[in-house]
Image: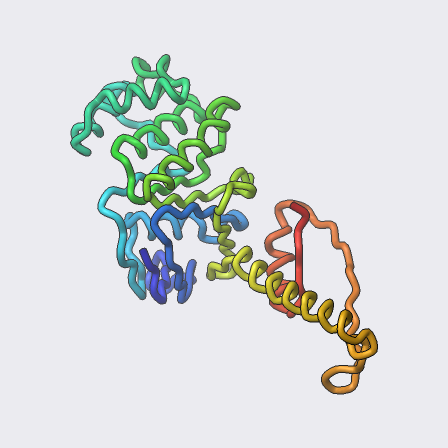
Length: 270
């Protein structure tokens, strides 16, 4: 799946929410999208899901089955949870038993007879998650799925994400709590200033380059310690210093992005 020069704004003369975004998603990949409130994370997810169309550019290669769980589940519907899931199961041409099984897995069986309008935020989030998984998704889009969930479901959700990815599905999660920061193999996108960057990919590239330089320096030292300390480039001696900067978690991605933009190598503790 690919986004090519995608730009989006909500009105003809409104500000650009996203501008000239180019991204590729591989089958089986997991992506965590972060950024400040209002940066455009939810808009990016709706573009990926096909709910809105780009103002400019194109989105191609979207899988046939898309599961989408919005940040706020629309409970103003005249259904019980069971009736709602059964209706969607028929629309997606899967067995109604799929909804029942997912409800049991997520500890939501007791909600099945409740009207949607009576659900708490956390319970509504569970129903939104269940409906997005009724048919095995080729693309799963989850907008702030961890918000309001109980501890059991929060622990179960990464397992579900891993299962979708293992089956070849692509998973994109918007999450201000960074619950997937340590998820194995996950990409991490940062939405800021109407653009989307991939901080980890840049950090890997810079770290790899730093490792290459370090390895070359060791080889020089083994051959000739005198040569390893010689002046380089324009005659200035190569020097490096390590400076620790403590910032709030909510600012970490933005600060790191600015430092990288200025040419500095950044690393975060594992």
